[in-house]
Structures are given as structure tokens and as C-alpha cells.
Length: 600
Image (cartoon, rainbow, N blue to C red):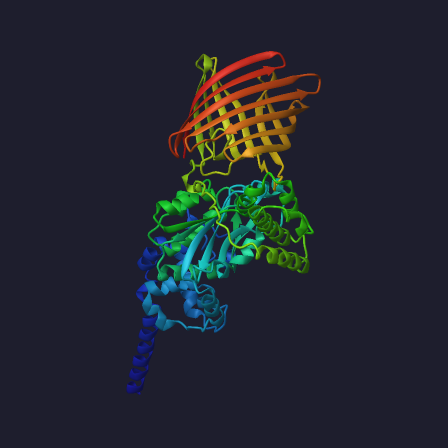
């Protein structure tokens, strides 16, 4: 009897020790959990910053406190790995491959205590992706698209760098079909949309850009090892199921790509550089400054390619009419020179492709016309082509936030600040010519021993899109804020106007007609004509001349005339000299100013 009891006790102790060896290993010791939960990589995997995870989907967390407590989430994740015995795609290892791999790397003894499912779908998806290279792609800004006013970035996962159209694009975007710019901006500013990561074929992503013909593409190949690429891919497949609140100025498309890059390159420090705003160009600069880019490629927009094709015939109305026609009557170009014929046919082909991509022509009609043009073109042989001049890279432009210190006539002082992005006084180097957008541009003035708010522009957009022989975009402007007009009183205002712009990228003139609504105690309406001439001869110099005349109900009017000059020293500083003449319904004001621009 005693022997039997002894055997039972020994068996019980043995089972207890065996259980302890599985489930009471050092990984469950509090100090071990504490240390692991505070490692930078674990926090990255949770998108943990400033005391909480930026993932707002509760399903992402195993612990009810996981959003704010990385230690609780680590403990719950380990317990979930141990207890999960399912062998399907929703098992912990298959559904959370990124965090699971990291935990098992830190605690290899845990492998003995977990069930390993097959994860067939995950393995198949990773194999189909075949990631060998990761490229950060920047599509330049396009003012007529509210989601792309600052540009847009996404990642391209390449299996073969020589066939990018067969690659996959990893994108982060707000989940919305909203195309109203004001609603999109409002919802986006205050987190009204859910943001998600997605993986799509690269060609499909390109087709989503209905405005792609207007946008340059910049590709930056990231310097990642195969292990780092695999780490990124597994996190992409994990995080794609969950959402985070989308914020237009900071937690946006560009910012959230930094999490993926930082998880891959564990020694990098990208995310914590951005707290209040994350402009695509700024995130690109951060990636470059961390020495994560090994090469870059510039791909000009379709618009630039088409304009280059049209140069030999830009003054030939017959050739241009043929290229832009619907019937492509070949007899129209029979009397042209060989060079003009080639230009006409190649321009016609390029414009026909745009019609097809915009669904303005059926597939059958497109193929019939395309082959007709191609047959004629094949009889004319080859010609030497001019390369499209590469503009300054976006990363070479001035930084996106700006504070201005101005010394005015009569020893007055003005301090102006805006959180982003690019205004008419800034040098256009690295930016889209004629595209200006500012957020929260605020000016405080010290005049006559008094400090006062001079003006504030919550949003100010000017899109001076240049018209040419092929493209005829409408220029437009919209602004919302407050400024002083009659009797030096501060009025809130909303204005929106349209017009035309003519010239070249570095020298152009614009004219807009703009209705405005003012409010202070009561509403006032006005309409104005605004004209200007802007010249940007180099990355250092910019000259401008602006004038406007504004008519109010009741015969009041405001006239303004302003020449200016800006000299940029580098990406962080510039000086501006400006003279302003105003006639406020008979009250004339003249003011000169010398300003220092500090970009950051």
C-alpha cells in the first residue's frame, strides 16, 4: 500500500515537473515578459507609439488591455500560441505570422509546447508574391485629386526588377468612395475613415490612378536583405486584416508604410520622427536619411511624354488635328515631312491609349484604330528620340513646414507660421510647378506697439495648371480663413475661383475670377480678378508679380499690386523681398518687407 502511494506521488510530481517544463518556463517569469515587451521590435509589431497602439481594431489584440499594455499583449499572445490547436488558416500561427515568428525567435523553447499548423494559404500567398526586392514608389502631387494633393507613396514588392508590371503593390489608404474634396478633407482631418493595408497587382494599382497621365513616378529601391524582406512580407499578411483610424495629416498612407520598413530594418528609426504631420515627401526624406535607399529611378508622366512627342508638330495644326481626331484619316498627313508624320502617328497612339484607359472608347474600336496607326507607323522606320529632362527630385525641395520672420516698413514685425506645405513665395524646386497648398497659415503682427492676429488661412489651395496644345486643364483656387480688410477689422471668409494659366513650367502667367463671401456681424460678397506672372529660373531664384481688383456690393473695392523676389539658400532657409501696394476703397497703403523663411 505504501509503495503504491509512493509511486502515485512520484508520478504526480513527475507530471507536475513535466507541466512546469512546458508552461512555467522562464518565458512566463514576470521579469522576462517585462523585458521582451519593452523591446523596440515588439512595440513595432503592435504599432505601439506614445503609450498606445495605433491599431484601432480590437480584433488585433488578444488581451483586452493590449492596445495600451504591450506586456499584457505579449503574455496573451504566448498563451494563445500554446492553447491554439487548430489546423486552419485562422490559427494563431497562420493569422499572426509576424508576431508569432518574433516570439518563437525570442523563446525557441516554446516551439515544443505549440501545435504547428500547415498554413497552406499563407505559404501559397507568400510564394506567389515571391518577394526579392522592395521599392518605395512616390507618385507626385496632383491638385485635382483631394487624396493626392501632397502626392502618394506605396511599396512595390518585386520578384523580378526587370518586370515591374508583374509585381505587387502594398498600399495603405482610407476606406472611402468619397470624391467630394471638402468632405474628404474634413473626414480625413479628424479620423473619420478607416485605414487599411492592401496587396494588389502593380498594374491594377496603376490603373486606379485615373490622373496618372499627369503624375511623375519616382521609384526608390530599398536596401534590404532577403531576411528583412521576408519579415516585412509576413507583417503585411498579418496587419492586412485590421484597421486603424485614418488621419489626413499624420497617420496617413505615407506614415503607415514607415511601420513596414522599420519592422523589416530593425535598426532604423522612422516612425518616431513624425508626430503631428507626415507629408509623403518628408517620409521619403526620412527613408533616404536613414540610408535605406540603394538606387532611384524617375519615370515621367504620360503628359510629359506626350508633350515631348508633340514638340516637332506643336505649330502644325494639321498634324495636331490628326493626332487628336477620332477617325485618323491618314490622307491628312500625306504631305507632311517624315519627321512630322512620325510625330503625328506616335502622338495619336499615346492619346488613343489614354482614351482607352479612361474608358472613352471600346476595346474593339481601340484595337482597330491602334492597328491602323501602327501599320502606317511601321513603314516610316526609326528616328532618334530626345530624352525627357529629369526634374529635381522631390526630396531636394524645401522642407514642408515654414515659419517666416518679416521686418516691415515703419519698423513693424510680422511672424507667420504654417504646418505645411508649399506656397507661391517658395521656390518650386522639387515641387510641382503651379501647385500651391497651405494648411493653418497664421500671421501675427506687431504694429504701433500692439500685437494682433493679421490673418489666418485654415486652407489655401492654388492650382495653376498650365494649358498647352494638347491638355487644357482649368486653373482654380479655394481658400478658407480670416483676414483684415476695411477699417482693419478681421473678417472670416470663403472663396473659390477658376481661370487659366499659360506658359512653361518655370515661367507662366495666370488669371482667375474669384467670388468671395466675407462675414463679420453680417455677410458681404465680392468678386475679384486675380492675375500674376511667376518666374522660377533656378533652384535658388524665384520672381513674382501679382495683382488683383476686388469689387464689393455697394461700390466698395480693393486693389492690390505686389512684386516679390525669393532667394533660397538650401532646403531649410530662404530670404524674401516684397513690396505691397493696396487701395482699400480710397485708403492707400504701401509696405515693403524683408523676410527670412525657415523651413523644417
